[in-house]
Length: 232
Length: 393
Image (cartoon, rainbow over all chains, first blue to last red; front, side, top):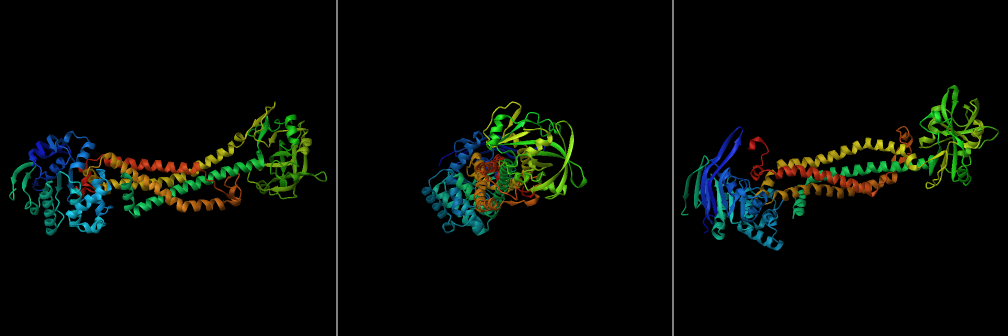
């Protein structure tokens, strides 16, 4: 397991709010190793999503240093940052964010198109990913034709299809019922265990917490607790 | 890849896409159809004017200025030998012009009296009716002018003129024929009589004001006469058509505006509707440049598909218009449409078609690019939030 897979040093994030500034993250110091199955938990407004976005280079910190897979995120240009995400990071969102006009197959195929992977390889990888999430029978369906749980499984397949080193999942079970949530979490846990992909969640769902190996609790933008759980 | 994605996106949008495409195709069609009618009108009017009035060009006596009535009495001279030869070979035609007055039904009206050889066949004017019998002076005039004067064939009107010595004389002239023409320059306020008779009446033997030549390439310097080529002679007509074209262009600019608005609206709507989609694309690693390319290409594909859809219904319709024309009928002259016969027949040149396509394409590219650039410059997190209303924040 690679140490210092992600390094977060004295990170502060401020948002302008009128003439004042809202501090979303205060002096965060964290390290993540490869293969972790970690959750950033905390109430709404505690800074979970902000931290996840900074790790995923979707946002930048106001102060401090964030090194992801050896890249100093703040130093990356827009195109280099896009390339890093394309090659190394998979995202799972609370609202699935599937592309509505594409089929399940095309949605999962999309990240591979960005990597310019050839057609045969794409078909192989997409089939493999959909097999992981148990949706091989829905490849021609559109997002509007499948359930919420299935949409989230498509989103997982899309996140893992390119075999990223890191998957960032923002409240992946928030819109799902208990059964679907457990299925999704089991799927992600299985992927984590079998492929070694690092998973970092932002969540306040108790169901997710049961599956985590490490739990980082944020309160008002600060790390309140960082603990190994469930035998992690 | 971008092309396939763009195509998939617009085809996947279903009815919205096809509505935009239809509106855009309509703008292509209307622009080409309207412009085709104007090109056709211009061609038609030029052809008619050559047939009825100016043939291949004209020599004007140097003092003659059609816009200055005072020059009409002075603007005449002996026909030069070079042109006489052409006239005898039926390759030129002499016209003498003089102001005169007529008294139809007891009313006085100042007119332009024109003398033309009855035996000429260079222009369409039915001058054979001018051959006089029984010492009568026959005249011909256009139907619109005859209507204004309330005269008809075989009516007699009093004609008064001033001869070369300044002496006034008058005679009854017989209306031998009323011709119908669309060329206002041979009709407005004009009465045509036989050239030899007019020369004798005015005392301007062997003289003319204008010599119309058949061959548009014939051009010799002749002292005392100024050569006017077709470009010059058609300038007024072309200017008039141009003015009307500009006026009418407002309509197709409006059509284009509506079409562009549809595309612009689609793209602007995309900022709100598809912000999240773009945020997702950014999160998956699509670069800003690729996103701009994708969404601009979607706009361009709308325009290209509109060409195909427009071609499906437009080509048969444009062909139909070309075959039957636009019926104008007797109202043409009331509308000031000089040179138009009973119908307007459009002409669709490749320049018109290609020009319209390029014009619409460029417009669509611009209105697709601008809002897309705005979206692509959003921070991925802002795009992902997909804020549509304040509630969502």
